[in-house]
Image 1 (cartoon, rainbow, N blue to C red):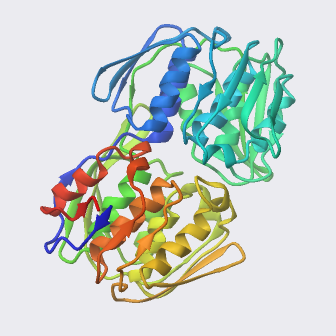
Image 2: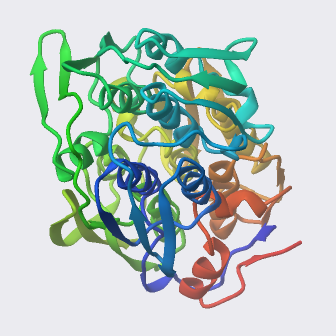
Length: 440
């Protein structure tokens, strides 16, 4: 794919696809609930469709009624059935890790795999704590997929302190705890996205959260009866980051992104952009399905360099590639600290982000786990070809850069953008009023 400057400002309003994290959880909790859960705004990207297929394979009735509208008839806690075939999670690390927790608490045998990228990603971080429930796992070297799981007949509740902040590991432990008697307790060193806790409450589970000197403590009372409840999925803030960035970079732009999630544990990018001087206005704030939501008005303007602290990583883990693109246009040197977790995403995102900027003629360097981007307040030269490594966020970041760089940018493959943002190119071309993103 190729991205070039549209020759006019971005304008109008748009709605990004549903939040991927919430969409995965809506399908899983719907499968565990008693009754039928109605879901509106479900992301229909490849990752979430893999989760839908897995829930069907485990015995839940999962049906699409219309674009974004789904129904899930659940089987209740402990009621999932043994799948007849391998569960293929495609490229989704979130789905794979959460599913490990769900399967660990059910006395069934299953095998999980994924695409080439997912099979390289570490699963040991969930296998180790979940083994203490009584579940058994057999994996490739390093805890990598394919993974065989024999769930516990009588799962034990866990008391687990996360070695690093990870919403995926926290959620896997809580999902396993649903099937265990007693209280499952998780301590996280830094608060991570709390969609699992919000949705557990939405379906009727008892969840207690407390900030303590040892960290944020989450306690779940096991073996609840989850009751089907309707869910409205807000727009994904990680997906909204791309049109937001494009509006900040393309001169004269004014763009409204409607109905995006504003969960305070997901808005690290917005906080960082405000520090950089970005013109952002939130309107029509509301709560939908337990999640804060609103409309975001974005206007083009100059940006200045900032230092992003490591404590902000959990609230914007997926947004660092596009933040690095914005930093390349800013005045001064932006330093993003503590990015070790980026090395084990869909690609080594730290290296891939630095390579993306280099392909555009921007200056960046990796120092330990920090990324430094040197900007001079002007667009980078552009004109390069970016190797995306099958990473949808690297691909979209490179294309956004191409909308404002001096020369167009190209990526080697954009097919997998649909894993998180179906229709990305068409949407961006609509607000650009031109064929700015094209094949070739």
